[in-house]
Length: 140
Image (cartoon, rainbow, N blue to C red; front, side):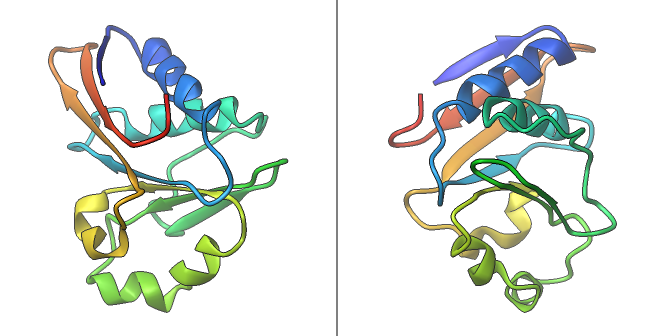
């Protein structure tokens, strides 16, 4: 599925629509250059999950946890040096915690994802416009 957004608000809304479809154990891998809108899309996913907290980029902490009926584990792999570091911080444990894992800069840890991973590519197409490509089996 491909959609075009023309504002940050629309990008958040598309994330929210996806978030409403997610179940415990889902992994969403986000791809896109710096400033593409990955964190805005993640905010939308949180809203779709019913999480009222303010979602921010976990660049310096690697992962932010947001409690909810279905918790959200928001990862940022930008500063990771290798895929092995993801497993060192407990990736497998997060997968077992019945939440939703959203991963920014997924290209750095592609071996961590299985065939069920929802892959979202966000592409800048203008100052405020984005093309969002969502590839998944069950969501939406």
